[in-house]
Amino acid sequence: MKQYSEKEIWEMLVSVPDPEIPALSVLDLGIVREVVLTGEQTLIKITPTYSGCPAMKEIEENILKELQAQGIDNAVVETILSPPWTTDWMTEEGKEKLRKFGIAPPEGSSADKSVLFGEAKKVTCPYCQSRNTQMVSQFGSTACKSLYKCEDCLEPFDYFKCL
Ligand SMILES: [Zn+2]
Image (cartoon, rainbow, N blue to C red; front, top):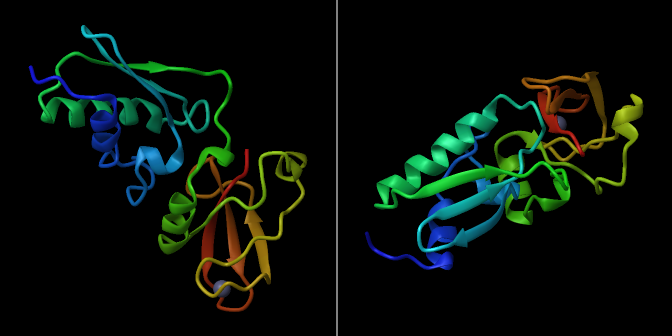
């Protein structure tokens, strides 16, 4: 088996998509915490975006599949639950990709917990950049997102909740 460097492993992970939002890689989301090469193992430590997100198992499988395709057969994915994932870990590039995908990226930082208290946040429409938007439902296509509607272009869109 060819020996890869940590950097090479990180570069491979760029092509592992998020199952829910295939436009984003697991690196865009900031899910991958650490790559550890022990010689015997290629250990990938990941932190789930939202505990209980059914996509997690799929992310693990996607990572293993990608590494296997590169000839790495000793990869192990370890899930780290603490500290919990926050939207702060998402890269700027990832947020931009979300917007292009028609999902409003998280605004502000995880310190803003207004959504947890049921207050509707003012969110920018990913289509026309209008701030004139309304929350339609706390839950969008998945529990990780809220459903919003733009009052200007009338497009409904998902907002990636800040956690
Ligand atoms: Zn709009």
